[in-house]
Image 1 (cartoon, rainbow, N blue to C red):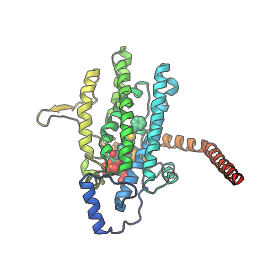
Image 2 (cartoon, rainbow, N blue to C red):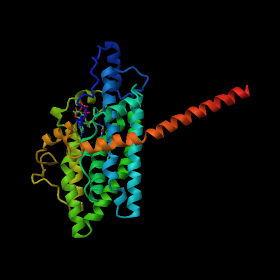
Image 3 (cartoon, protein in one colour):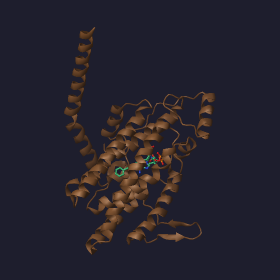
Image 4 (cartoon, rainbow, N blue to C red):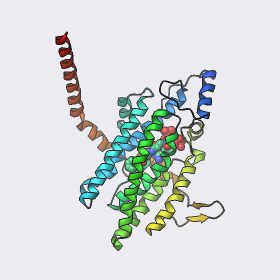
Length: 333
Ligand code: FAQ
């Protein structure tokens, strides 16, 4: 029941596309034309986008929970205000992304139902707990850092509404990353106990962040078509490597150790090389058995149930207002 996306795919067969239209579509992608909602697109392109955009939206919504855990315990009023704003930004990102997905002909209700029923995936990273205040630093620095690395290329995605949503999201994500780095910096340059807390957070978040980029290229089912259609611009492994190369010097600047005894700089390739990633852990989290999968879904469902009266009240108000306006229009005739 808590497994992510065991049955999320639209299994109805994709009928053969008109070869002429398909060729024209592929040619538009090749020359970097933006595809807009009313343009013809292959059914597989539409489904891929709905899958990716909705998983991304769900990740933003579920991603509020690990941070929400620290709102009441932030160490100062300033930190609390910043954290609250960041969490509100995540909600906004979820909403822009649901709107982008809706332009592809799927309703917000369907998407929400896929998440609440446990059919839809969201990012593996949000199934890990935030145990200390330093985790707010690590989430901002590393999780938002990984998100930016993955999402900047999405600003050039071939699908117009997704690309445009990503531009604003990326601007906000870079603030988030800065605030996370600033928390880590304060802790790492603070007392020995604070530095140990920052190191512990890095130890717990490093490997799950590397997994955020998705399975290794040879195991990534969607990368080839998504790259041909210019939805994705880089492969999962390419983005993971860019992230590692960016983060290692930042950890060094902070005076923190990356928890990987095999980490070394490869002079030949010019890249930092890590030890092996434990992909069995990634598969376990995706199958619903991460440290917090059950808790995340329980909290999400509870929030949905507790919001019923708000949605009912909004609908009742909208109906009353429409009736009032209609009555006024009739009276004016
Ligand atoms: N977790 O063939 P690929 C954030 C699935 S937002 C769970 O390589 P694709 C902001 C994948 O869906 C973070 N599932 O797939 C924030 C597919 O399964 P399916 C979210 C994963 O789509 C910060 C299967 O594995 N970002 O952090 C994961 O070509 C702080 C095979 O994979 C996005 O969603 C994973 N990590 O590439 C919020 C960005 N990785 O659908 C709050 C947009 C892979 O066939 C606080 N998405 N899978 O059942 C993407 O760029 C892509 O979808 C990838 C995966 C790169 C995630």
